Length: 140
Image (cartoon, rainbow, N blue to C red; front, side, top):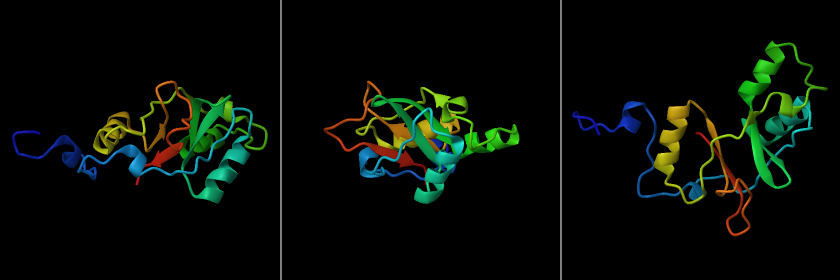
């Protein structure tokens, strides 16, 4: 809160969810992923098919990166051939994550601070969890 009674999240124009809502309550419960050796064309096809703006990248059940629509745009602008360029060449390695039980407002604030529109949801070891459905929380 600032002296004017407006909290930072409201000042930045972000919607607050309130009521102690947790990330898992708003995330996509079907995990769409890609692998580092997939091509950018494959990744773009998945993103288009599922109408999502980012894909978490897993290797042996561990989150190792993320590829976003911004990464695809950068690759095209640099002249990369999406049919032969690997996702690993343009992914963001070791992305910041949130846990399923994290407060949704805290996650939204983290996104604003980092200037990102997507955060993968993972456990502390960056693995998919069997006790909580794996999920992906896209910004709205």
